[in-house]
Amino acid sequence: MLTSLRFERGPQVIPAKFEYFAPTSVEEALGLLAEHGDDAKVLAGGQSLLPVLRMRLNAPEVVVDLGKIDALRGVREDGDAVVVGAMTRHADVATDPLIEQHALLVHQAVHHLADAQIRHRGTFGGALAHADPAGDLGAPALALGAEFVIQGSAGSRTVSADDFFVDLFETAIQEGELLTEIRIPKHTGWGAHYEKFVRVAHQWPIVAVAATVKAEGGTISEARIGLTNMGSTPLRATAVEQALTGQPATDEAVRNACAAAAEGTNPPSDLNGDADYRRHLATVLTRRAVLAAAGI
Ligand SMILES: Cc1cc2nc3c(=O)[nH]c(=O)nc-3n(C[C@H](O)[C@H](O)[C@H](O)COP(=O)(O)OP(=O)(O)OC[C@H]3O[C@@H](n4cnc5c(N)ncnc54)[C@H](O)[C@@H]3O)c2cc1C
Image 1: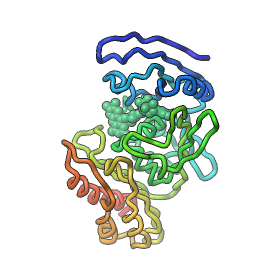
Image 2: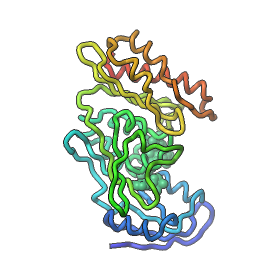
Image 3: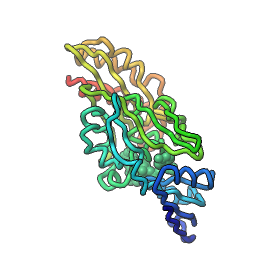
């Protein structure tokens, strides 16, 4: 069943007039997106979209609220993956036992994301679809090799994390499509640590590092590292990953390998710090994150 409301035009802190739909299935939502094309905008938890509408940085004629689509909510196991429905709230991801057991890095990062109020409204899929380079979920998704299931009226396709983040606030989701779920390969037994640098609690990260490490018999056999806010998209610290592989799990070996953390990055300069400062932070935070993930 569709619900439609009308919002009237008001002062600048009130969004421009739009028609509101709350479909109860993915098919209904896709039908609305197909009907209204680029006049329509998808609403998830509203924690990023509503400020944009209120400031009138965007003024869609139609808002399609996914909040009543139960099929998009929840965490489940599917073979070697943990699958998170796009509309699962951050607070539910943070307390989910499957996430803690098989995707410890996501468990840690989501606890660092904003404050409790926002974690109870914002959604896992909404944050990833928004693709803010300072968002806390992109780097863990990249480090864990997550896959994004995107559905359109012609069917669904799966996009790797490497291909999902295209540019600043831009993803592989095309007009008329929805992100429906995120599949995270299980990293059961891997150590993990999300190291986030902020000036005050609950802030967006100035820089953050997501590290997950497999250490066996005192040797690092594999490491996967994602960087937050070191470019227009989340980035993998591949030079560090390669340098760590096969190294002894010691402070000295990790310190040497992490010196390359800022290689290939293009961080922004803003009031929180310039690009050089961010490169320095990336090196320090990567070392801290890897040491903690490896239990050193
Ligand atoms: C004060 C404040 C502090 C915050 N601090 C942090 C922080 O420290 N770290 C952090 O990571 N985030 C932070 N956030 C953002 C938070 O994570 C939001 O939850 C997130 O950015 C957007 O998720 P949402 O569910 O609210 O999506 P919405 O705001 O509803 O949507 C965001 C965008 O994604 C699109 N979209 C949403 N869902 C889908 C879908 N399924 N398919 C296709 N497109 C979709 C929407 O059309 C919109 O363009 C903060 C937000 C606020 C207001």
